[in-house]
Image (cartoon, rainbow, N blue to C red):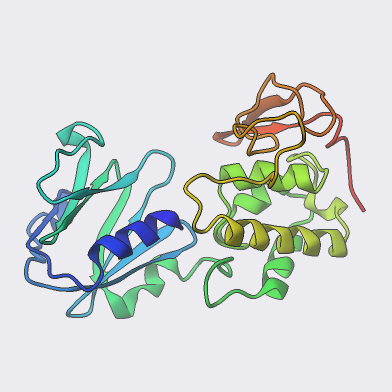
Length: 259
């Protein structure tokens, strides 16, 4: 996750000169004087490990964000009442806005926060066979919902969900059991390739080199492209809610089950 990389670059190996956790349960916790050891991600969860056996666990969900500023720079990520955490060293200040999950726990207890997650596509625990078994364990579930369920495999968000369904030529509402095991396995392989390719990119892309005649804005096949022509066939991209989030698809390219 790019957020974890930015935080790690700004904070790891540095002593905190300011800490401010603005949630009632941890408002009195003072991490000043401790060194940040590393910042890593597990799926969509962020784990900031701190000297003394502590971990600050946060999750962005839909609206949260961590912003990194030069110490002394004006903060521009939102109004002060949206700030949930401040971690500062002599050079950088990390500010967490609208964080729906923020807790301080013992590093040895991290599994209590992330132990329910499936194999992480970018983590050392990655196991494609386990991820495949997890996906196929609920054959009546929609493909889109199964991909977003971090208990199956961790790391796929709403953008990659829509893009992966397009690349598999399947609608997000296709029952996962209608995919053959080899097709599902290829989808998992594609997911890992996409996340690895975009790990260090400032803007995610799934189209690679855009088709001829299309510009740099056409970096995604379907996500965010409602009412625009499909880059592959020209059909108008459609959007609809799936669960609590919008999804996007091409009704021609994603017309049914794949094999």
